[in-house]
Image 1 (cartoon, rainbow, N blue to C red):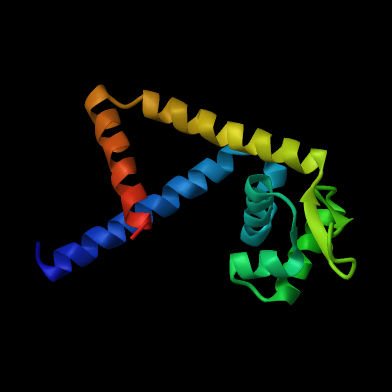
Image 2: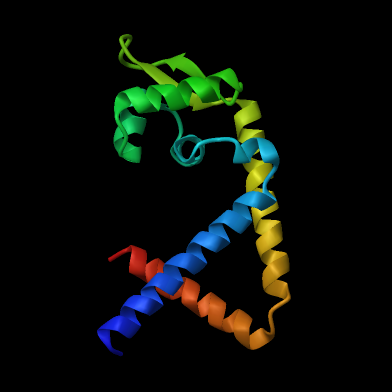
Length: 144
């Protein structure tokens, strides 16, 4: 494959990923679509890893603590997160998902998966197999 063909294929793949992500996001309830990328990432991280400090979240997401503070304030105003005393350091505060935040994440995640499952079901069996094989390759790629 020539360099220009490779570059073109990479650009097409990037476009396809972007379109897929936007389409999946649009399947989620509208209130989750109003969240910033950082806010969605914070909710996902808290759901996966549990409570964390603002500084830990900022480092994990690669943003400045001030930016993370803004994202957290917005999530707190929506009732999706709450501040709790740190278990071992009284000077710090942990950020945790509320029951409302957990429920909203589940509804959004379920809606996205339902849309994707229904869309994949419309593909023929060969395309489905190709897509699932590509998923394995993509997972290897992100581990490089």
